[in-house]
Length: 112
Image: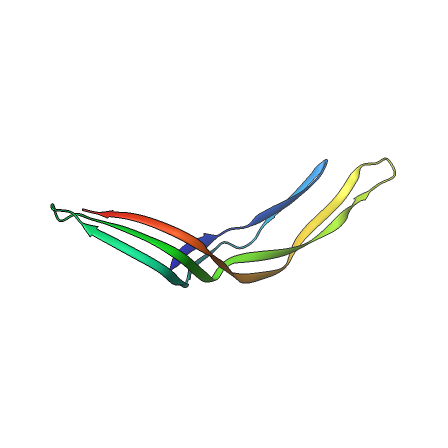
């Protein structure tokens, strides 16, 4: 599981106007699925502590982990004297997407 707070922002800078907007902040919990294929070696010491070495290939997928904000920007309006008199930006849509990664891994863990 992945608990996160999603808060995106963007801005346009057309002097003398600076437009900025923020997407709605959202709290969410995303499910995570992990699969591993590899080798594991564990050694127990005389004091009952243990060391574990693990390596192999891992794939992890987080469902609905982040948002993609689609914004629309209107080109600024400039009057005859060259002064910017307007510029706007707005959120068109917000898509929630998944995140995944995969590749080799190596883990060394010491248990007391």
